[in-house]
Length: 123
Image 1 (cartoon, rainbow, N blue to C red):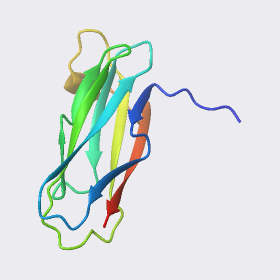
Image 2 (image 1 turned 180 degrees about the vertical axis):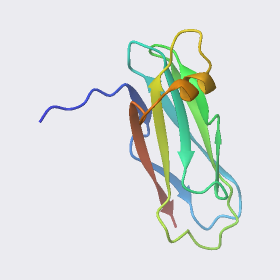
Image 3 (image 1 turned 180 degrees about the horizontal axis):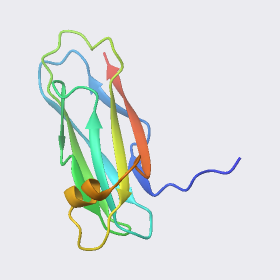
C-alpha cells in the first residue's frame, strides 16, 4: 500500500485535549507546517462554533513555514458534549501573490488535503 504524500503536517497529529467540566476558557495550540514545495492556503474548522474559537482560522503558509493556531474551548459546560467534536484542517495550493480568500474563491472541487483532529475530554 502506497501512502499519499502529506503536504501539511499538524502537531498534535490526531487529537486535541480539553478539560470538559471547566467553567473557564481553555486554550491550546495547533501547529501547522507546510511540507510541500508550494504555498498552501489553509482553513481550520470545528464542529461547533458555540463551543470553540480558532485564531487564526485561515491563512497562507509559505514553503516549510509553520504557524501556531490557538484553539479555544469557551468553557461553561457542566458536562462534555455527548456528540463527538473535532477540528478539521483543510488546505489547497495557493498561487503566488494570492490572498487566502482569493485562493479558496478560485479553487474548485475538494481540498487538496485534510487532517481531522478529534477532541478528547479529560475529566
